[in-house]
Length: 396
Ligand code: HEC
Ligand code: HEC
Ligand code: HEC
Ligand code: HEC
Ligand code: HEC
Image (cartoon, rainbow, N blue to C red; front, side):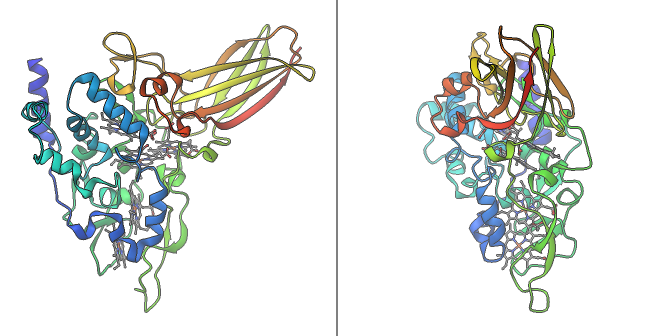
């Protein structure tokens, strides 16, 4: 235990995030609307804008659950998760002194509570999270993420993809991680997600197979001619620029799942071989633990449905007591059932007697049954299945 404490202490000292306070005129996205309305609107639809306690039921339920199970204050857990979910928070860690104060209900008006209530963090991953990154410390240990992996620009300096941008409202700074090296920016948070006891349940950086497309090509769309600011800065006209969309669409948008994976079927003796191929550069599912692929088999005898089977491809997480738990409390997990980046997986399923054909349908779900019931998630998006693809096979 002592070693762990010493190590933590050293890490905090070496990589402790330096907080840079953001002036009110830049803090929230409404301050950007006058000139970047179109971008603010796109971002508002994204899950980056929902990535916090108030707006994401799954995140909120997990935070509450981790607090209850570890018997630590909810505020401490919130500060911990803020590392990636609310990186402009002004307090970056809490100590045992805060825990004691919180337990005795003496934490009202404390620095921690003020930081958590601040409007500066009420928007999750907002404009001044990404556009105030000055440096990314990619050389730091792989466990050091979010807030601890970056240095911030001074308040009012926006880092961006253009080296000739001028704005009357703020200063600008070209950064290559906003341009041709943007994967580094995404990996600040989308990598090395780990439980309280250090069990890494997702690491998009190590599974990633670099291809000709980078994260922004797929999740912000291709570059297209439009404008960055609606202010007429180009001889009285709006300046034309090649830009992308700030939608960061992904797993939560059901329609995005169509055709993401490929299916092929083969009869081999009394089995059906189902091969699922993933052309994407990261695993599917990925991003977070307890995501799920569902393989549905519908066996037909001529035109009559004679049987249906559902197979869940997901990962289960076990607590210290070997009980099913959420990813953030896991000490170990079952086999990774995701389809590897640019790879494939084959599963064998027994045939059904008398069947003359089988239809296989593939779906994605954000949360598997186990974790959804542990957290009692209510919103329909956690139960809904997103259709990916289907195939039919005649049986001999
Ligand atoms: C400061 C941390 C951080 C950075 C930097 C970051 N993300 Fe995210 N991202 C998150 C968090 C947290 C979520 C989860 C939001 C939620 O589901 O509540 C997320 C969610 C997403 C999603 C899922 C959306 C969905 O609908 O399922 C995509 C896609 C995504 N980010 C892409 C990117 C890309 C591309 C980059 C780099 C340009 C990037 N992110 C940079 C933290 C970050
Ligand atoms: C998750 C990180 C992230 C967040 C959050 C984010 N941006 Fe961006 N932004 C980027 C990246 C990456 C680019 C560069 C895209 C490219 O051209 O390759 C960019 C580009 C821009 C540009 C240049 C024009 C363009 O579209 O390429 C402007 C202006 C901008 N962002 C404003 C904003 C505003 C305003 C917000 C908040 C509403 C915001 N951004 C939120 C990552 C982010
Ligand atoms: C009064 C208008 C105005 C407001 C308000 C404004 N900007 Fe800008 N911004 C501009 C102009 C003009 C440019 C330059 C556009 C160009 O060169 O095409 C710009 C450029 C940018 C860029 C690209 C910088 C680069 O070097 O590539 C980013 C990022 C950005 N703004 C973010 C923000 C954010 C975040 C906010 C809100 C906190 C904001 N802006 C508020 C006018 C504004
Ligand atoms: C060739 C396109 C492509 C590239 C490049 C790519 N992705 Fe994806 N990503 C997808 C597809 C397709 C999905 C499935 C959902 C969807 O269609 O948006 C997905 C899903 C995701 C999800 C949600 C996963 C889940 O199951 O919760 C995240 C987070 C994500 N990507 C982040 C990233 C990051 C970060 C990078 C860069 C390191 C990246 N992606 C690069 C195509 C891509
Ligand atoms: C290393 C950075 C990092 C830290 C620290 C972190 N997260 Fe996340 N978290 C992410 C990213 C990135 C995503 C988005 C993945 C995706 O959408 O596929 C995410 C997504 C999630 C989701 C899924 C949300 C959804 O809508 O599907 C939950 C739940 C979650 N985090 C809970 C937590 C909790 C609770 C903590 C603190 C105990 C925490 N996270 C700390 C990076 C982090």
